[in-house]
Length: 387
Image (cartoon, rainbow, N blue to C red; front, side, top):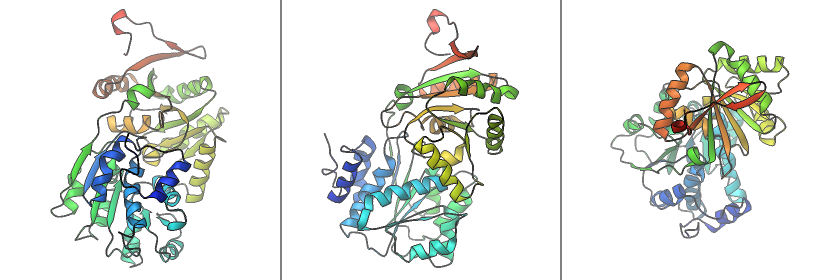
């Protein structure tokens, strides 16, 4: 079995990993580490929960520890959300320990404090494109000799909402350093490649490890649109234990769902983009710790979040494509734990879910909410595994 030492990971980092009982690299870490050490440009994809963040941090920080990367030139990690940026920064800090530091640079936060943080010369700069652009324009973030830029959740960074900021960020690098990009759904990266003239990057796309089909049970529940929140409330009554994430594709619905659930005495927390940094952190801390077990959120907010022990995902709509389904469902079934992914859908949505079921090669089981119970639908003998 390959170990981290054989991959060339620095001994200090291996010791840190051992503190988390991580002793063997994942398939994606094995696939990309040597290439990242070699300075290659790389776009890589693997399922959620397979260790993509460590896949790029371990070789890059090994270079820092071995003084292959100049201390004055930070590694830059671009993130689509504050929450993911904060998570990556925390992971980098954990790995660096007393040997270095990482900084978080995002919007809706005090820019003066962030400028002061840059004076510490962080080894890793993690942030959102708009704020990093601002710091570069102010000449506070020195980008000369930056050794590597990582585009985490790159497909989201190239979405219509974030594309302009991402492209503007890339314009700061006429002679780009090593470029890494990763996601569970890599998608079309031509927009990113177009930002860097003559960029040549290898694509590594790992086959499914069966997380969606093996560790996660998928359940479909029919509901008329106007009754969805009532259906959600009934389901939450049944799921009276365990940690639950509830998704909606409409950001304005986060508050609406939360308010209606709280009116019916359902204890839940909203997480949405307009919350200030302190409140967002408090919300996630309460959910992570289990002090609050139901989190209502939108897709962008939870993209890439690694929250331990999420037992149930509830999708109150289907989202625009299978990528949304994958990223939502992937918040459970992590680190070898099993989970359940519920989809509450209209007749039209459930027809589309059947298409996703075939495309992703998963089984989705229809259930009926009646009398405070989740019941199986009677099925024909030749159609017992899915709907």
